[in-house]
Every structure is written in C-alpha cells, then in structure tokens.
Image (tube, rainbow, N blue to C red; front, top):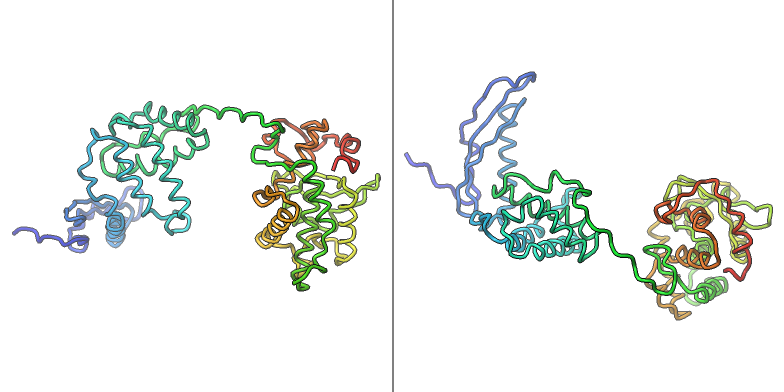
Length: 425
C-alpha cells in the first residue's frame, strides 16, 4: 500500500515507529530512535532522530522541535537543494546567506536582529562575496582560501572589519553549507583569530594635532577655555521657562560637565563621586579619589582639580548637600542622596553640550560625548610636555591606551608646575 502523500509542513512523527535500543551504557535511561518524514517546500524529506538516556516522550519532543525548526526556516532553504559546490560562492552568499540574516533571531533575546545589526551583517557578507570573485564554493571553502579572503578584507577595509567578518561568514555562509550537506565541515570552526594573520591597520596620517586617543576628538585651547567660562557663568535658575526641578537638573549637569572639562573624569566616575571622596590637599587644591570599583580600568587614583574656579564650584555644591559622607556630589536631582542613573544623566549632559555648541558656535560639541574632555586635556598637556606616564596615571587610562606601562606609584607632582596655573586651562 503506497504511503499517503504529506501536505505542506505535515510530518509523521506521531505515527512513525519508535525503537527502543535498550539501556544507555552507564545511564539509567534508554536509547531511542525513530525515522520520520516531513514535507517542506513541496518536497518530502527523511529525518532520523536519536536520544540517549531518555524516554520515548523525550524522543518525540526532540523530533517535534527539529520539525518546528525546519518549518520556521524553510524559506531560507527554498531552492537551496539545487546548489552544487561547482557554483560561485558569491552567488550563494547573496542568494542564501544574506536572506537568512532577515529571518534569524538573536540568541540572547530571542527576537529578530535589529535593523542596524542586519545591515552590518549584510555589509560584511557583501565584502566576502566580493573578494570571492568567481571562486567556486568548493574552492572558496579551502582553509587557505578562507584565510586569504579575510586578509584581503583587512587590507581593504581595516582589520576590525575583517575580525567581524570572520564571525559572520562562519555562521551565515559555512554553517549553512554544512547544514545543506554541501560541505562536510565548517573550515572556519577550527581556526583561531591569530591563524588568519590579519595585517595591522596603517598608521593614521598626521593632522597637525597629536591624536593621543584613538577615539578622541579634541577642542582647541581657546574653545575649551570659552566653554568653561560659559558654563561657569550660566545660572539655570534665572533662565526663562525653567521650573525648579528642571533648573536643579540643569545645574547638576552643568557642574558635572565643568568637573569633567577640568579633570577628564569619565561620566560614570563623576556620577559615583561622594563627599568622602573629596578632600582639601596640603597645597590648597581640591583632590578627588576615584575608587577602583568605579574606575573603568579598575585602577583607583587620586587627582587634583587644577582650575580653582571649578574647585570652588564643587565646594559650594558640597555646602548645599546633606552632610553624610556617602552623599553623591552629583546625585539624582529629585533625591540628592541617590546616585544619578546613567541614562538620565547622559541625557541632561547632552543638552548642556548642545546648548553650549549653539551659544558659542562650537559645532563639535554636538557630535562628541564626554570623552572629548579627556582628549582635549590629554592633547594640551602633551603639548606642555607632561609625560605619557603621568597623563596615563592622571586620566586612569589602561596601559594599552597610552601604549606604555605605569603603576599606582607614579609621581604626579610634576603636574603641579606644568598645569597648575590658570594659563594651562
């Protein structure tokens, strides 16, 4: 009697024969197996499911999960049965791999990938398809060919792009080829990143100012001075259309920005500063302690506030705050005893930057984050002759950031004579 023809997405898991192969060695459960069929895209496929140390119910559950996955991703497999290893790898990437990006779900959140993530993945796949040229799938799958392709991407589009391409190509190209049984194994699965021997990016061209931080864009000394002067003169309480609550928030953001502009503190470090972390130094300068628990590089440090006007602004803030040693210097505007949460603090500071950019005609302030203060001070102090070691210790950079090693015992006393005056700020 002929088998009944299956309808689309229909399978035979419920009616197929389940075989008990006996007790799994050294386990309590048994080994079960079954052979079942499913109709996908008008084609009936045969599948075998096996479980160990399990029950018949476990076998059925696993088979049904496999069937559900096949149904969910069947659109990706449309027409893929016709693919052969003699066809162009570039065609496979554009026809199959890029299409699968639209349907994949995030492993972490179980939701479709974000539009920016999809666009990036497709861009990387496009680069790979381009460097493959007319290479056939079987030739492009050779380990040497894979390494050469990644090296070309690094040479033409930077090393960091190639490092991303390694992961994306492995998942969306070679895993698909293995799943479609066009390849027996993923040639990228056994390769470490170092195996690709990706070339280093060429040095950035000299632009007239020292680029001391890879991601830093610095203000000129004049722009920096005008910004600090402007923020010191602002008084949100007297500005029109300011409710008391919004005025308090604006003042907190202004004062925090002033401290960052004078010290290069990261916003997370500034948000977590407490009364107990502030002290008057023997030289009359205000000193701040950044705890290792709040430092991005997990290295605690003590720094001085070299602009006396900003130091006085911090003293005035402390006079108005609760006397508890745990009181944040820049606490939550509606509850000064609580740490200001990152999202709201960043939004408030962003408004300060935008307002300042418009008021002073410094468009860069609309494009940068608080990292601009570190880049600005770092650049200016380097021009003054402050050594890389002392700058690294003051700003709390990692050794990799400054390409030098330093310790907590670094002597910062030379900073006093170099940047201690108003002229340096």
